[in-house]
Length: 538
Image 1 (cartoon, rainbow, N blue to C red):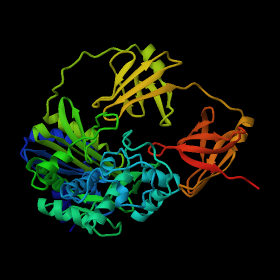
Image 2: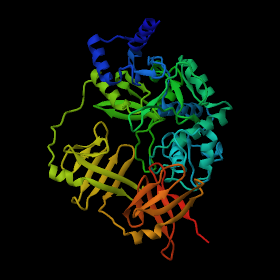
Image 3: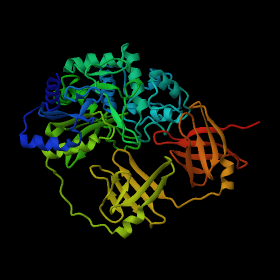
Image 4: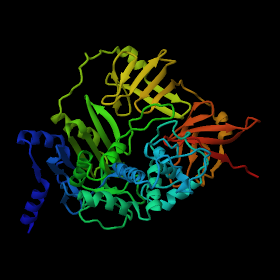
């Protein structure tokens, strides 16, 4: 019995299919060697060329408790790759005349507050709505990653919002809420759920028999992978999202089914020419800045090739799908391991098949005495954004992202069109960041800002946000300002500028006419200027 189970495992684990030489398949497998084990989660891979899967393979374990290996037919939660399917439904309905991309979304979703500015479906699918992100709002309100989240929970939170991050169309800022709202609109317009609509117009016509929007976290799905992450002690933990909502996420599928969806961008079997063109048409900001974001897809370049791609990350699931349309070539990676970098792995696979078409420039040898001076904290006031730049191993970097020097004061981020330019000196530097599709942002370098304990006293108190229906308490412990928040550990914050503190987020205190603290605005990435009013004691 044990021997037969062993051979069953080996057959699943080493299953390959394709039309590439063994020498090339060995190079592909070497990229995933770290996950090609019986004691690790991993991923499924499909390499597509001219409408065919030329190589597919599973690496690692689908379920570590029952020793089930990943295969190309394993089903994954693909996180934000789901967005293109939600956008596809909106685009399809617009072509059917059921809605207009320029419609005010409140026509269909009156739960969205009237912010005084029209928000359109085009804003939703291009991330230019200005609506605050649902996941960020819930975390700030004390929701944990393993809390069950329903569509109603998201709509209730949204209904309490009193402001936008920015006016619709003024900026690009990734927003999950927009795609949840798009899913709600599909149901209200068609009378059937997004799950049923997508199944009837996309999945069944394309033969995607192992694909569906997962609307009930408790629903059993045969051949579904489990997902994992390691805790701080290196122990494997199950890490599966608990969502009873979809649109921004929650599509379940396989690399084999995604190959069929990918090919539809060439055959146009589902939707036709107008549909495919709209899906890949990038938006523009109000000031005419061209975006790279289309309908749940990012249109960009890599080593001289046009690319159409999107990635995803929820709990322990990671995914990436990248298409090189002019070469009729794509790479699909779906993973059940939180620490895996599916984007980087996709590029490594592509590099085996596509020659770099760029004109190679001589490498610039940076003067480390100048470059290391740019390291430090940089703050952008309008978006309340803080960037920490470090200098290690003769490279300037932000987190794990290393910058490539083009001069001593200008840099690029590899494999992107993002550029960084420094002016001034190391003490009073200004940083301009130009990101393709988003435009220009200007940051100023900060010097150390210190406050004594007596000076911290005036910031203490209880503060309440009606938009989150949540209270935070600001207090001093060990001579440090700290914040007590529901269901999470207290956090320490340190002064950044006058009345502005940083910790897990940015807090900007508000003063009244008597110069007394009356509240604060909290900003945390995809949520900006969320107001907390000071609770006055009697």
